[in-house]
Length: 274
Image 1: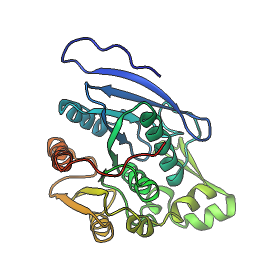
Image 2: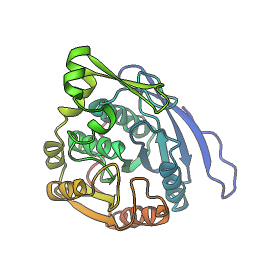
Image 3: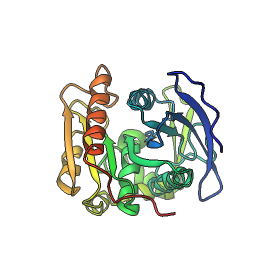
């Protein structure tokens, strides 16, 4: 999709972009275009969208540095096509692949992938498979994927899903929020975070940021990423929760400092091959 003509002003152009994934589903995103072809792609977490305030704030901070940014909805989320899936870690990495290839074909220089929560898992899984983006930022991703399930699905979830083939997750009012099918749960449980972390190229620079008071994903998961990713830096924000409430500026500052330091070190050999 061609870029809209930008007005000659400090205002950054924003353009809605539709990108087909490998299943023919349309992924919907928003491109924050600056005068630079350098691009950072931002990925949302579980049951979130491209309009998550964490992604919106990071896109704003990145574009103020003169770098373009793109935030999008994974398939089955937000405005994108497809059915919502509980697991879908591999599919989200494949969605991200479609986005990377689209912008590479448009001659963008994709310098970084940034993901929050489950989006952090998506960017790390991408890096383990494709080895073509030089900077990865994992914000509050989960290392131990076997944990955190009971809190959403309830006790004896494996027994119930083996019996019925699915579990319906309802809100406090008893209204259906989403259905978890057995295959989707198995996708999560079979995603090997240890293997994928160790498979990331030593040339790829990875930053993990985590809140010490994260109530969703324990900060110890960040230590596991740090222990297993070859070229890794770890930053723990002492008082931050999973959404960095009250620590938004500190989060943005850590991300920008990491981007700046590695961009100044020169061009990486990692680039998408079309």
